[in-house]
Length: 116
Image 1 (spheres, helix red, strand yellow):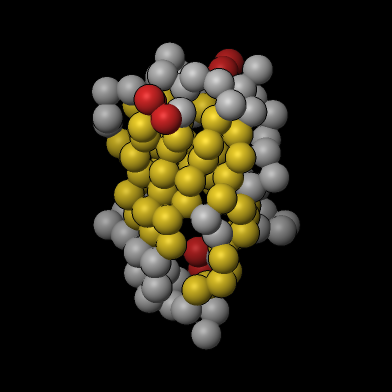
Image 2: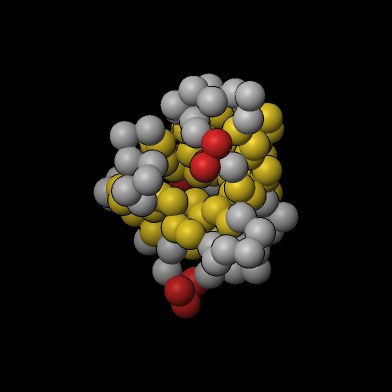
């Protein structure tokens, strides 16, 4: 069972940047697609970005051009570089497999707050 710990969140001003990390306890090299999700109270989790083992990426329209997802299989880590942050990016960010049958229990996530 893969266990992940998300980190890197915090309080940042609009226009600022953050880099989130998702460290997995087990190998993620065989998981075809890994993704970052986010959730605001009262709203369903939203897939923000995903990346395949081959390096193909997909982004939600709201973050395209501002966020970059990457993965380092040797380190069993997935990253999310977030630039030009907006208040609407405020949420708890989680990582998980972006393959339904391979998803593991959600971690605690990391809080991102964008405010002046």
